[in-house]
Image 1: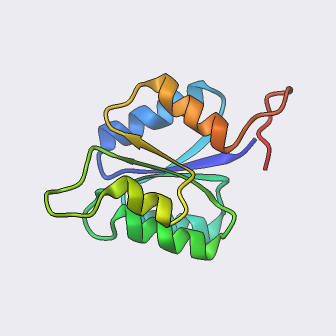
Image 2: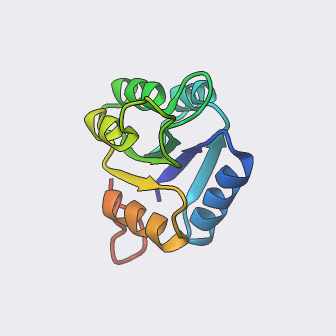
Length: 130
């Protein structure tokens, strides 16, 4: 079973995503900032990174880019409620940096679980494939 690292500066969103994933049988770690997420990945790799793209400090694009440089095979799902006015389209940026999927907030539990399954499918026993 892979471990998923969820990164979002919004504690309620981060907690909700973690709850949905744990309820679906995944192991989950949480980080409030991109910097914290990168430190966690340095100490113990994850199989999937789910990162918000719009965070203060080290934003999702910086976090995603550095995480993929550290762990080139790392699967990534990028999420966002949209970009601030004047910023480049966050979903395009995420895909350019290697995100396998993007989800626009708000999204439902099933959309998240389907995206995770597409990025890191489980085998018949319920274990995720590398």
